[in-house]
Length: 251
Ligand SMILES: NC(=O)c1ccc[n+]([C@@H]2O[C@H](COP(=O)([O-])OP(=O)(O)OC[C@H]3O[C@@H](n4cnc5c(N)ncnc54)[C@H](OP(=O)(O)O)[C@@H]3O)[C@@H](O)[C@H]2O)c1
Image 1 (cartoon, helix red, strand yellow):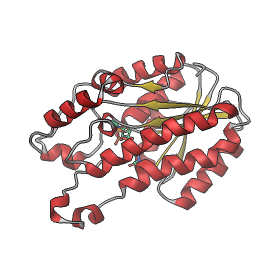
Image 2 (tube, rainbow, N blue to C red; image 1 turned 180 degrees about the horizontal axis):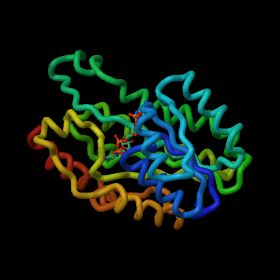
Image 3 (tube, rainbow, N blue to C red; image 1 turned 90 degrees about the vertical axis):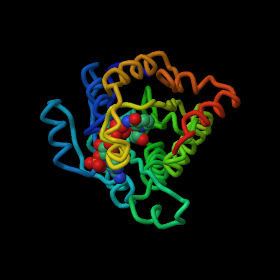
């Protein structure tokens, strides 16, 4: 991916990894648009990063997705990079049946269906742009699932498979497909789960992780991991099974 001169839309770009990507793209000389559900957080991001364009949008809602695509492609004709970053994570215990799954937000819609549908909606526009790219933010848990977060892990494994297949399909259209695979990063993801684990603190800051991601983009590295996830991307099935046993010995 070229490092500057792009117009980039980052979903969920007001906080965490998405904001760090918005900031890095912006500082490197790209025009950046972010979207998310909470206007307050979007405005805070814009105050920190003047020049940032913002849009309230729930990517899990069909009508919001359609109006985002219409608004973004008519106001930003040069839009050539879509970053599917918005995501949520929930602890769900299926030993009690379906109740917990149904009681909260739908990870399948937000983490998996939305990137798939947004990619499909933007592809006709991206196919006409130079240096076009789609970036999907998956997770190390798509490679080594967490028993505590079974649906989250499944959505990220699905996003990995989708990214591989899409990369292959879109070659002829000149749209590059990247997958960013974060390890645990300090962010606002899954506050309930982190609180349950005694405020479980992660050292890795979004900015440090995103610096490595930006280097990967510049080198056209299509699957970008960091630390443990860089290893997972190269691991054998046996290694992944070992990591699964270690991570889930007490769940
Ligand atoms: N942090 C980690 O340890 C880690 C590890 C692996 C992968 N990831 C992935 O990295 C991505 C970014 O997460 P993060 O860690 O930076 O957490 P975060 O700070 O909570 O960021 C997630 C962002 O997504 C937005 N979002 C959530 N649901 C949305 C929806 N339906 N429509 C539009 N925007 C929505 C949120 O804003 P609103 O709530 O205002 O909409 C928020 O700005 C996620 O896909 C996550 O799964 C994170």
